[in-house]
Image 1 (cartoon, helix red, strand yellow):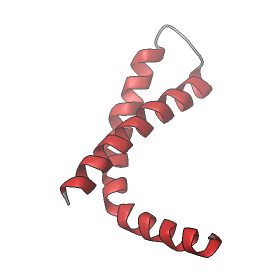
Image 2 (cartoon, one colour; image 1 turned 60 degrees about the vertical axis):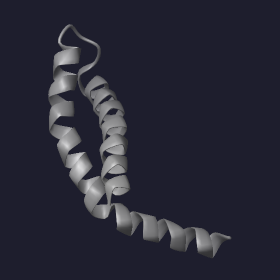
Image 3 (tube, helix red, strand yellow; image 1 turned 120 degrees about the vertical axis):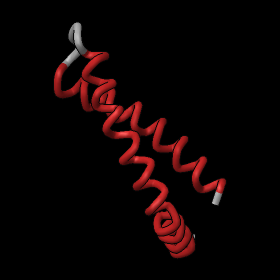
Image 4 (cartoon, helix red, strand yellow; image 1 turned 90 degrees about the vertical axis):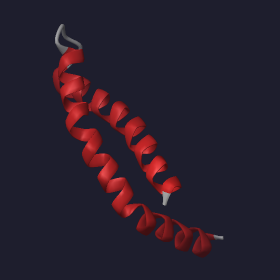
Length: 72
């Protein structure tokens, strides 16, 4: 359980940082308020991403194992 929690937090952190940066840049471009808009998006995205990663992690892991078994 501890491993799952830490993994969910770290994976969601990295993905949220990268994805909110990308989507903010795509939508707004690189302007003087880019960092503020990016951080606002990140603050909303990270908690949601962490919760979703923790909640759906076991399902995704099981699905991955089934897919790998089929294609191997």
